[in-house]
Amino acid sequence: MDTLIKVLVCFFAGLGAGLGTGFAGMSAAAVISPMLITFLGMPAYQAVGIALASDVLASAISAYTYGKNKNLDIRSGLVMMAAVLVFTFVGSWTASIVPNRTMGGFSVFMTMLLGIKFIVKPVMTTKEAMAGVSAKKRAVQSVVCGSAVGFICGFIGAGGGMMMLLMLTGVLGYELKTAVGTSVFIMAFTALTGAVSHFAIGGVPDFGCLVLCVAFTLLWARIAALFANRASAITLNRAVGVVLTVLGAAILLVNLLR
Image (cartoon, rainbow, N blue to C red; front, side):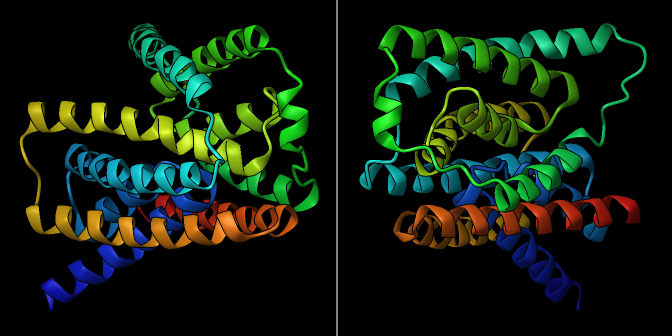
């Protein structure tokens, strides 16, 4: 019975995380961690390590799928990723000296609000419009946005994928598919860094949960990414909106159960 419960929890955690990653570049940690902690009683540090490990392959296969369909901006992604990694450390250090952290539920509410935004006001930017921005301006925007995303992630400990999607579509003016593709490309590397750090410090967590979560997240991320790259812009906006809204509400409910 315990084994069955573990498999079911990991399946649904992987389902939510995979769909969020493949459709919207959402971090698997936002879904997997609270579910493992709530339903399996797993220590938070181990749960986050499993979630980050699940994020690595899911983001990588999603990035590959988006890149294969020419929906990935590697140059700007690398610039933004460097800024994210640097300022994540800055945000973490800042959080350590601030006595009260009142932004714990920030990423959950942002997920829901961003989902509603994609349904009500879809992103209809074209690649032609993206090409009109100079390389220099794009590089500066990538550094600024990456710094903001990294600092917020380091400070509140979550929300990286959602913040990147918001910055890429709202500030850098990316069309949605390229925004998601670039976001998962960055997340693959940031998740790998986080997973290695967690395992090096805390050791390898529950191996069964690790394998199940990685496998299920990878499967659903691949399915979602394939669908997303074949869908029209308006269909993808609605799909992303529904996925984010539902996942945000589900994560909020799970957090209330803790």
